[in-house]
Image 1: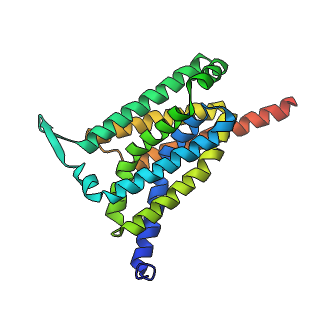
Image 2: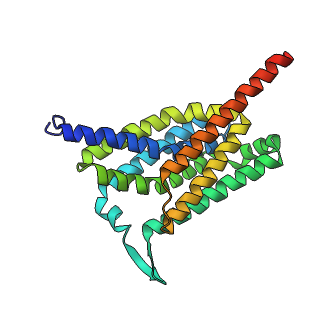
Length: 241
């Protein structure tokens, strides 16, 4: 009850919820794209199971705060460069994200119809759920470290993460449906994933790129895409389509 009546706790909770939702933007984009590889009837279920698994994973990470903090400590030094397990996870996750996005871009360039037919065969439910949880593990490292830095109570951190994942569950479906309806937005989203992957690799190599710059580029690119979609609708109206 003391936590519920403490204004400082509520302030840290609100701040953490906002930060967790903002940090989850990357994950929502990835989930939206990878879930579209499944037949339509399975997409929602895959997103829900993947995000529930991701939520359990984040709570377990929060419960292992001492271990999470230790991940930032270098375990080997190479030419004056201290490499920590956090760096390894970020670099591996960033490379996987770049590979995944580049593979999808290549498939899109080769032909959308062929890609969808082949993707329906290749992408299984377990594979998609596994990819969602794998990438969420990478995104969770910084998310959990941020939570530890903002809030002092485990209950507050868990509550904020639960709300953030709930928002991701609500947002992933509409975003995935929008991307499926508008192929050009999928290419833009894939380009964003390449950029995010590069930022993760750079962060793992101790070249930190402010997330604000990345989100600003994403907002600008999204605004340009909206203008393109509106232009396309205008052209169709003029042609009577």
